[in-house]
Amino acid sequence: MKFLKNRIINFIFPMVIFISGCATTPVEHILDLSANQLKLRSIQTRSFDTSDKERMMRSVIATLQDLEFVVNKADDELGIVTGTKFVGNQVLKITVIVRPKNDKQLLVRANAQLGIKSLDAPEPYQDFFDALSKAVFLTAQNID
Amino acid sequence: MRIKSLSLGTVLILFCLSLTGCVTTARINALKLSPDSLKNREVESRQFDTKDELQVLLATANVLQDMGFTLTEIEKDLGVIVGSKERDATVPGQVAMAAFADILCAAAGTSSNALAMTDAVQSILVSCVTRRNLEGNKIVVRVTFQRVIFNQMQQVSRLETINDPKIYQGFFEKLSKSIFLEANKI
Image (cartoon, rainbow over all chains, first blue to last red; front, side):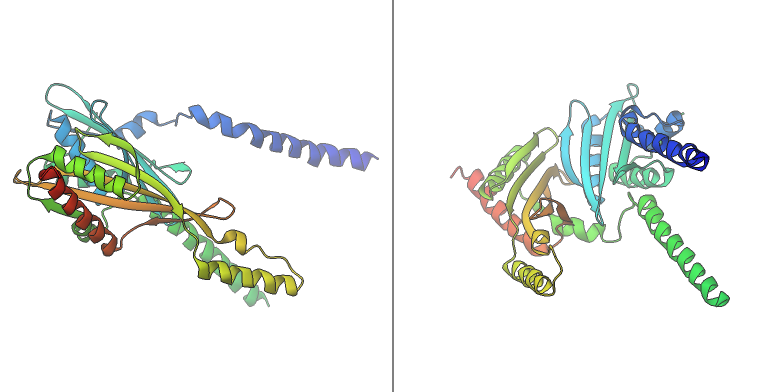
């Protein structure tokens, strides 16, 4: 009897806590903020020495097409472009936002997710901004 | 025996490492330009001898409608049109093979669900973008197609980017005609 009691405490009880833990996790992801939010923002953002937003938007669209994305949405006024691409059996989604930093500069921020995970590594964004720089004939500058 | 189990363990570890390696590479190279990007751009783009971007955009919308696409997004200031359509994706040969496999399994006393896994519906997405060429005297149209194929159980069975040059050539032939008709107001 004691043995059974021990078993319940040692095994079944932690198991129940473990399972109920799993059940509550997904909802919490909705407002996820990564610990390195500032770092992520700087990885995903570059500034460009131009104030021509339309030209920048068109270059972003051309770059996405070069990267084999299909453009899903584009809004000139808000400066938002979204695209999707199939990588094997996973979907790669990207949103790019262009907004003025000051009178002479634009900020471009890209964020992407592959499958069910966001892309947080600096390399893919560096590749994207390299391609965008070539398309727009301007240098992408890191933000502070 | 010990050597055997050791080598099996090594193989398993190496296999796991190679799998995680693949995943990381896919993530790291997710936004890298592929070596084929120039070739793809050529296949997916055509220049039209006009300066009127709006007219080309209108002609593109007409062609997409002719092909049965529903336009889901239009941004004329950026020259973007997005459309989609759902069509039948059943392949008679595939269905026959699956039915045959199911019957064989039933005869052998096991169950199989091959028929439910056959292609049923395809959802096709098209995105067209117009822009001026570098000299500013012509309009370039670039079009890209994607499709998602669902099986009989309405699960996604395949994701495909369409790269067949014939599809693009066919589209641009239709677009050329439409631009001509549009220009001559026919």
